Amino acid sequence: MKITLVKGDGIGPEIIGAVCQILEAGGAGIEWDEVIWNEEMPDVEPIINSLKRNKVGLKGPITTPVGKGFRSINVTLRQRLDLYAGVRPAKSLMPGRYENIDLVIIRENTEGLYSGIEHFVGKDAAESIRIITRFASERIVKFGFEYARKEGRKKVTAIHKANILKCTCGLFLETARKIALSYPEILFEDRIIDNMCMQLVKKPEDYDLIVATNLFGDILSDLCAGLVGGLGLAAGANFGEEIALFEPVHGSAPKYKGQDRANPLAALLSAVMMLKHIGKQDVARKIEEAISATLKNKDVITPDLGGVGSLSRMRDAVIEAL
Image (tube, rainbow, N blue to C red):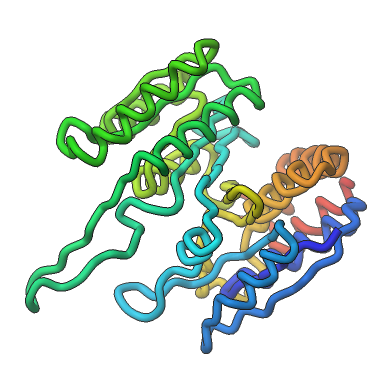
């Protein structure tokens, strides 16, 4: 099977390179259609064209300039390819402050404050426009409930700030409540975003699947990653009607480039999601078991996970476990 591959920049080529070696060792049988990313001359069109051909892609992190420069490539791909549903699991894989966490955040990917409609009002003020539509709200909430039904999840929680943002969040909440009526077997509730952050820290075990607008989903997915050990374990996927793109949640961490210390597991777990999506459940299961075995050995896991190992040692340990 041919799949689009974008290694990205910063630590991207190292972690994605390790993932490709592990997938080969696991017998995934993938032919890569690699698109080289050039951070000096950023051109998103080759990535878009490859994904349109192959329908499935694996991508490493790409640096987004802060406060200047080109727009986020991640946001551009989601909007241009209508990858409207961001799926970010948060599951306990090793001992930590919390035990037995198993959450999924479903994030609307195409509108909200990430629409990019902003401008300066004079030289000392700036304005950003938040757009929430009934169409996108219905689509993402339905996706969340269908995902819950398929995965056997029991509860969906919709996140909003409708007490203050009465029009935009009010529309999202109204839509979510209406959609929930079509899924009587799944418990539905809603939470205000700031209260939800507190509840996740106090008692994350009370939550199952969370569906949210773009910005709130982005923030909550990082919070939930912190519950299970950090962004180094945070996998991600972006789904449209025809195309699916899999990528780690974390950034490109350019200061760690070339140091053999980056944690490859978020990218590898994203690849596991990809394998399940394309029907290679057996390979996905083998790799998940190899990851579990590797995480028990502090001599090979990277420092962010409490170990003294390195990227290459983790890669080799997973391959040996396979």
